[in-house]
Image (cartoon, rainbow, N blue to C red; front, side):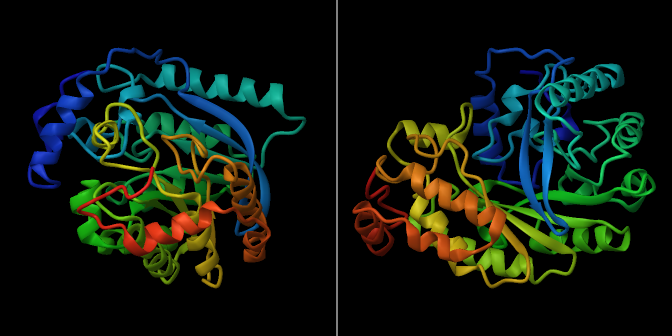
Length: 358
């Protein structure tokens, strides 16, 4: 792993002790990545304020999230998939875009109306994606209907969004807020900004003619199942009440390599959330004035959100159905005996003695 420049350490912005541990863990990375190939690309369907669109999701391989290179979030292993050296040239990034267009042509009859671009960091951070590349990408996808761009609140600026809105695109900024509770974001996730910064970014986006898609983290480390569930319910409601935030995506934490969560998991000190918790949160927040979705990565595995193994696929199918239709009645159509175990965990598990069940 490349050594970050001094300013990237950003001492005092997160928990310096967390950052020191995270840098040590991330330093164990051995695999290297081709700067001309995207990290991932796939075609799917997504619910938007304008309806369900076929989507092309692109994860660009950049030099990595600025904050993650400083140590970063306790659950995020994506920086381990980043290119060595901290930067990727414009020509290489555009090679990645072409590879994604080639993938799309092979898997769809018509170009996707929705483009989603992630960098596992901040697309709007010009250390990750130069302004030249940002403008070229805006031009490349100017004939589509909608585009989602990932960024931390710091980098949301009207002039950057104008590159896309001037092309006639509907623009959404995907912000990894993780939780509306500042203490949990700081102490459990090790993310440095406050909810007020998220609100400011929403206002900036709205004034620029863009919207915001908030990403929340279901069950960061050091929370019990009940604490995690309750925090998500409150966080979704608070996000939905912010003007300009039209979608909330709740991401159940999964165990990724080269993270603090992985170290806790290996020692028996962390269990990913139950799928029942995910369903419960979605059911209890179906009345908010926003689209609320969830896409549990690695569902049914020990490292992803899971129940007992027998009902995982059924509950996951109900979650996916809810994402597209926003109808909470789908959760009444799935049941399993393990739900009684989950209910016991919700009642009895504590953050100082967990997990109560694996």
